[in-house]
Length: 340
Image 1 (cartoon, rainbow, N blue to C red):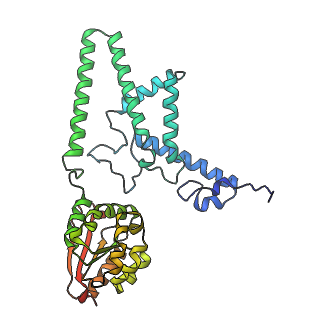
Image 2: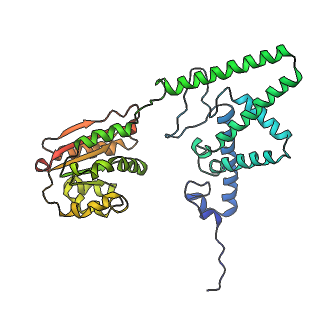
Image 3: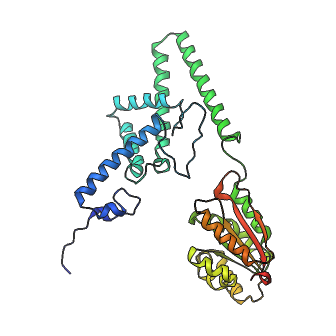
């Protein structure tokens, strides 16, 4: 209409940005002051995590905590070489390679510095750069010893460095693969899906109440092969959002109406089964898959208790979760004829 409109830049981001949410509703100068202060705090926390101790961890992040050592975002042995590498970077700042590394560092930390929390995963692209700096620092040390020290000094430094690297590899391998700190091997989701698959027989309505969207996506992907197998059809899967769960507890057959409208039956190979789902009349069983052990567990426990109350003869199983409370599922299987 020929008029100029100047937008407030602090209103153009979601709540995870420093200026998102309630911050964006403040005056511009006040918001700018808060952003600069919070960005400085986040940058300081990143430095703390690298050089001293990680100030906080997100629930999706894991760093092994070892007796007597602070958890840090880089290995203890790597730190001195990172310092050597940074020193070399400053001395050779005019080189093109140095400009690339500096740009990398700046781009890698921005998502964390400018967000509401300096979580490790938000500056994860910094870690390969730190590894490069550690490699540069290590080679600087080796070349310095090689050119400026005698033979015995060289042998001594090489022995110490080789011993340190060997110890680092052995220690890291123990942390990651011993099973003491981190469970490796078959992932819990696959184990859970195998248990769920064993309960999905032809004419089964599957109602899954799983809290997080990314968990719903994982389970949908892992269940697809079994759901589309001719030996287990017809079946229907309803990944229930909170607004539908009450209706589904009252009448699991409502999933026949809701499920074909959900993304799973529009964007995956389940779309080929929509007509089959709608035309099937004599559904025999219902299987409720309820995520347990999560921060929302009181809500989930309430849902589980109401499902059990409506099923006259339920068959209930609990998955083990393999050390992760997020992976514990309650599986309630029941004949529809016994569902009150």
